[in-house]
Image (cartoon, rainbow over all chains, first blue to last red; front, side, top):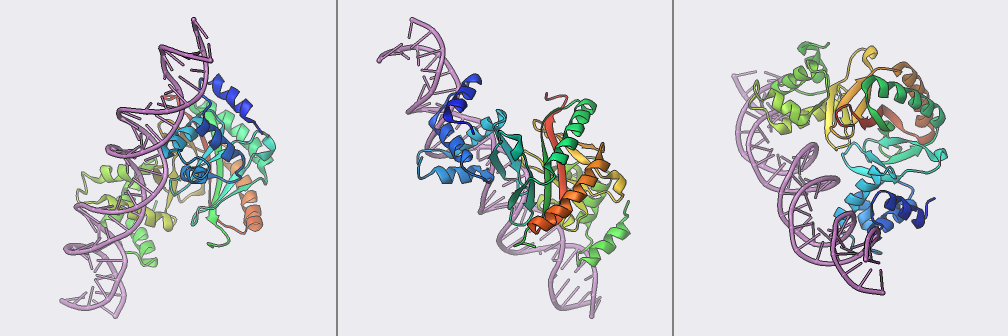
Length: 148
Length: 148
DNA sequence: GCTATTAATGATAACCATTATCATTATCAA
DNA sequence: TTGATAATGATAATGGTTATCATTAATAGC
């Protein structure tokens, strides 16, 4: 995983400053498995960083998303959730989402097959519809064990 | 496509009443290609149905979604968009979404291959994670011709 | 190490899609 | 026809996200 030095360099390269809020948010994302909402992050950092503002969390997440550092999932309730984009391809995954309680499960089954197809589709769509493809999302919606 | 008699029967079977707002919304969805937001629908019906309330549009869309009549896409700007679920399987498609302006393109390329993989994945995930799978979503995000 | 420039921050108001409330109306089974 | 009640419309409330703006802090140039 990246350390603060690498992050700092990456920020500099994009004319962005390396600040305490950004470091603490990246740090939290780095040591958290799941998908965090802006409020999750805001509340989690409250004890160690009481001065942090919610607006800064949003701004930082948007920046990280723009830089391709963070992956954004808009769940069906319209709330954005964020996760560090893993450096190694081994960790690429897709989502299984409970439409009742919003639980998000990362699954890694069939990812190889999925990515093959994704690559093929991506190329074809980019050409046919004249899009610049930035990302893809494969999700299954259903009811989890508790909600079924 | 369904006519009002079929819809009416389907509503009755679910203890739902057949009303003017519901008929007009279904009618509009039936003769519109793209994905409509609640406000789109509200504004489109304003001339022919001035009394229609926005809340009713939301309630109707939620009902149609619950009944499986309508497909919902939550775009990355957090706005819900709705489309009549097509009766014939031939029309099954996935989405190409512009992350800047929200444009949604339905594509039908590689859908056969995608659905094969989807079926396989669905079965495995349902078993492994004890989910009841209701739906899936495959989306590509990028910048459209105008926004690139 | 200073200092000027200006990006970033925090507090808060504004925004906007969606949901809840509630009195009124309309559907439909009996 | 009528009674029970589902559905509606108007509007207030909610909640996530964005805009505003004065203040603070990071960085490049000296």
